[in-house]
Length: 186
Image (cartoon, rainbow, N blue to C red; front, top):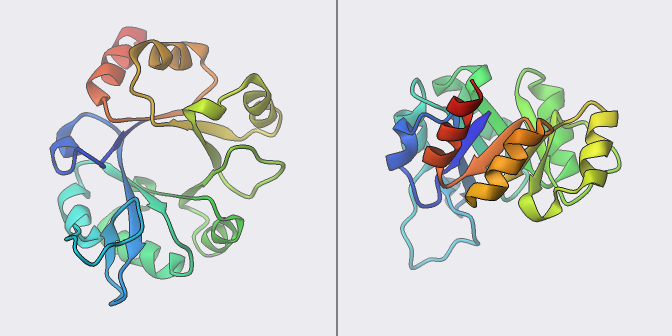
């Protein structure tokens, strides 16, 4: 699975050939869900999740990375009005968010973004590239948990991870490189 990060690529990456586009979301004081990795600042304008959903759904799947919890059901219901369930993935570092998501939306893939994990109800573990260790990969293999890795832009690291066969998802700002690797493996 190839996931392209939208941090510097929206809307350019909508037609990148990736399977999903990853967006970090936060909710404004007014309740509008916007694309933002960091804490919202009053002096900035943010793209709404609605705008991304309108542009993305039907072209590319969407991986929604929750930077805050508490509105999971509202968010997923909203995304499902525009996108098919198999085209919506949610990631979060919050165990309780994962439990709420899986209880209400068992058909939605939900990933836990953590450095390590002892147990999880998540469908996959989403690791920062620096935490991809043999120990983490072995734990996931033993517990039948898929592994997605973010944000891998370095060509040699990308090649090693893809060649290992131990990861199921690769999040990158360089979908062109990842697509070449995927084509070479086919």
